[in-house]
Image (cartoon, rainbow, N blue to C red; front, side, top):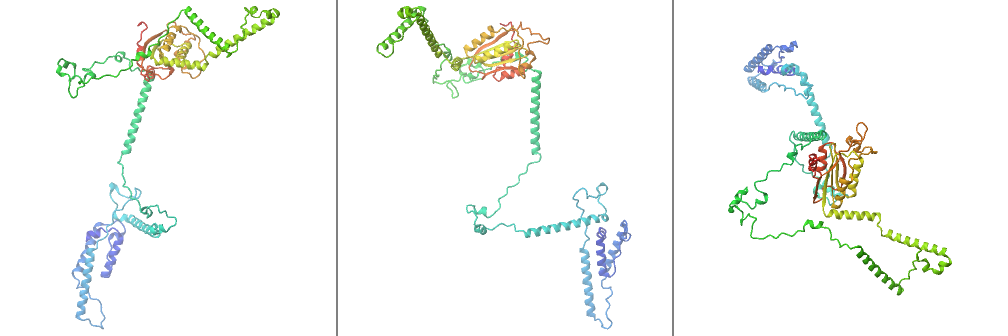
Length: 563
């Protein structure tokens, strides 16, 4: 009991206990020293007061009959039965009060619930405040709880006033605008079944973002390394011997694996090791007749030419052909199908054909003869012009011949040129490749230049004569005007003049044929023109698109005295 009274933190509880004591004894309960002084409470005094109160209550409960009877009027005497009833009532009242005191426990305040860090008031080392200082916090908490209850009641009243229920099915059908095609389930306004929430695990999207960032950083690093390697001119195949190493032959070729029961050819010494007439053997009793394929070399065989005739034989054939045409024309004139041609008058037969007229007026006859001669010449020239091909027909004929030439086989030529500083040489290399319908590329590098061309036999032969015979590679001409922004103008090694402003010396310049052969189909789709490459990596990149990057290694190791 003393401990429970000591835990009472609020003064309201002391006042309630004083009221109860007045109702029981008619005198107020003595106050604690902390209530009298209003200062800091004395724990020992509070304990002593509590013990005294407890002893007083125990005495009162132990001797209920010794209490003085209530004052009665002297005029009315009290009987023994009345006194017994009064004593029983007092005993019952005292018993009920003791039970109430035993059951009733002082309210222990719950620790305050802080909503944020600003309202938190605690002592050092995270120790709670004294109960006397928590009165303000407790009152604020009670006020806040009352405000929350008031808000909940207001919200419930508002919800009760609003009718959130939808129209019934009968009301919907009675509506003239109701669509009967709508199902009853949807028209009844039943809510759809909601799906369950699927939560992502913590850190899922953070991991994905980190992976994407790592991938982007890796790609960026690769680009930077490739760019630096391209700028520095790092050659991946510096060791040319490794590039041309022949791999070691296998223990057994793939085409013999189905014939030999083993991993090497050593087992062939024993005929039992051969796979003959076994379930997984390719050797059977059946004979395979391969399909005949037309030899590819037959399509490039030139057509048979007719036998050449001598000059006398050609004249004889021409005379016979003209005689047959003349006889046919004479027969048509006899039949009246064609008018007879006018006499062919020349200055040599003038007097014989026009005898009398020539004697009478020789000047007029001579003018007439000159006029007929001019008419015959004009007629002849017009006939020749009609037989000539137009510009479009000549281009079409040339394209047809070049296409037929390429259909017989594709030939490849690769040339190495020391210098292309002369603009005339660059023009000849590019223009002739375009005119002969060749495909390929011209790579210009500070160390040397490489020209790769492919096309028909006739076109390649003409281009080969140009590169090795016609072009004078040792000649040097003054530079011509170059358009702004041209890559050739930006390359310093392609300038025709040196640092002193003089023309470069090309006396040692030469063009070498480093490869000549055939291929099945074209590797380039068109003539790519001149490509300026500052490094070996750029040149290999251009050639690798046509799978001809090996030619760059051959050209680098090419020596002028090899052939």
